[in-house]
Length: 97
Image (cartoon, rainbow, N blue to C red; front, side):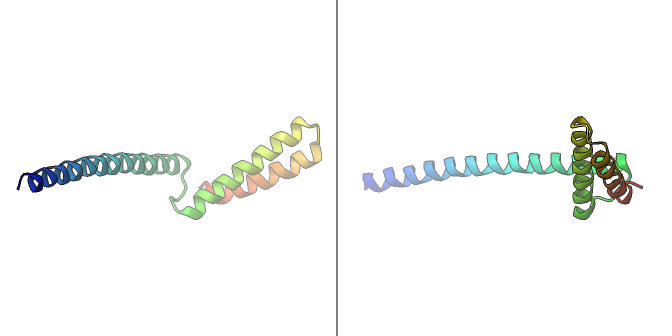
């Protein structure tokens, strides 16, 4: 009789511990998701673009093309720098209204 009470208490304690951990992680991930959503909303509102995944990916590709232009100019490759710059600005013009 005493042993059943101990294991019942142990099960309740372990269940409570697991519940606390799950609730804490759920709150943390919910906080991170809200922060990410607010960041994307602020970024898209400031740039005047849509919040769709395609727009975000096009923005990233445009920024990478501009970064390639900067790297080409730093290597003194003017022709490639101009090509990367024009491509990057072209992609960015699709995204930003």
